[in-house]
Length: 356
Ligand code: SAH
Image (cartoon, rainbow, N blue to C red; front, side, top):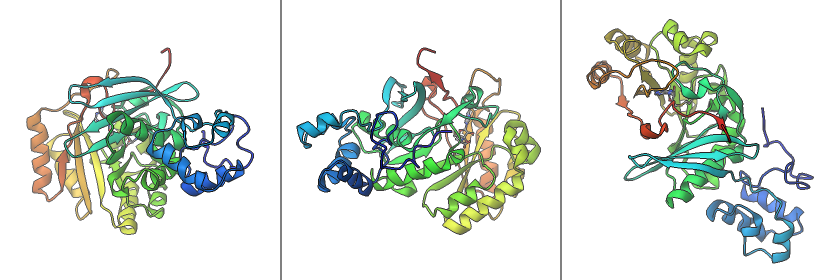
């Protein structure tokens, strides 16, 4: 696992490969850093503006800095990834393949609507959870993303669209709560340094024992989305191998704690797989499971992937399932994923390396 967030500032600036990238640092940290470089404190604020506001990719780009200093600092890594590929779907969803410093490729998706620009960010290269219906898991797990590699995805989309990002969903590649430290750092940076409201940030997790409780203790105002996908334990284990070590009851207990601590309701995601978890009995069971729970159910009709032959239910079945939940008093919405044509929809993102 890779974490750059504990690197000390001191002594971290000797070579490009070992120092902590500037992206992800707060204004106070950047100010400390410029001081260690013999520069006046106000350069910290300038550096902050140029990195987060003007998209500087190198200190050489920062024209307000003295030329000689800029030149000596050229090797300092800001921490931006390169755009390896960009593709646009007919619905204007844009998928970016970003090349990390070590050559791995991750995906980020920009999803525009009339009023919003949402970024679907990745938290890992690949994913270890191996959910049976998800393309990312089929490719295995490579490593956690560092904080700057998460923040970079948002800046890339913002710059490409030339529009402020309004919402962020941690629904790209990876399981965010296995990389909780860097994800929480990224959330704080996106909030404080880029100005995205915490309430406009959603962390989606399949559930890792103890981690939802731990996230609650950070007292962030982010939305927690939990990938439930089944109304009972045996069915959930069939679809999500990790559920074996995490009984549904324990998962829901932790979600209740999240609601109690943060005062925020939880979203439950439920991918609809024809004939498997979309029957009337499942709707009834699901509404019983969630009775009295301060929550919202988000139904995601399955997006096809090559490796397995699950089917997406008909619209009629999706509507019936939705109506049953509504009739039982469950708050529910259906999410037809965007970007389907470019494999940019939920569960269709996968890891690759340049040259694959
Ligand atoms: N690891 C996180 C984020 C995964 S992606 C999590 O498990 O929540 C976001 C959502 O897309 C999850 O609910 C995930 O289960 C769902 N998903 C995965 N594959 C899918 C597919 N093929 N069709 C529809 N949704 C899918």
